[in-house]
Length: 235
Image (cartoon, rainbow, N blue to C red; front, side, top):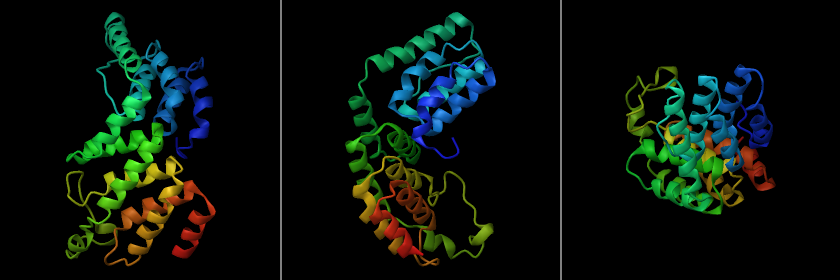
């Protein structure tokens, strides 16, 4: 979960059936960070875990991977929890991955940054070429909106004293999530745009350093010679 490497997802899915309940909880939460499309069916099965925290962890992972949410309370009586788990399974059975991805891409146009962020995160796990194209377009468009220079005019908003809450217009999490997801998807076509983004944000007084940070992460995950060259040039 720390490295967010999808290569670990198959082994983690097997751990959802581990005899130790703590292992099952940890595996589900790790899949929330590095799971893929293939992780969803075993997580749906894990909703029936007899240990409530393991079942709830599976529900959390499903929300993160699909961008969808269904009512689920693992501490409800077993018959009610079973109905909630069945509703999750029915939703997945009636929605193809193509339809799920299409809906997530549509959400990138939302005016609500929270909606966009959750969609971008999910696309980073389960997206295909359609997600790559949509995320490239989103980052290219939104990187022009840089409120940080004006925000930094206040002397308090510098260095370790800088602060803003989740509702602040300068909160960087949504744009960061979209840029990082291009890295998780290994989008080689995004390399020129990410490299240009770094070039545009190399002045500490005018840069969107949070976006630059996410672009560096994305280029590192893509890892092509062109991506490596962009990172070296940044140094």
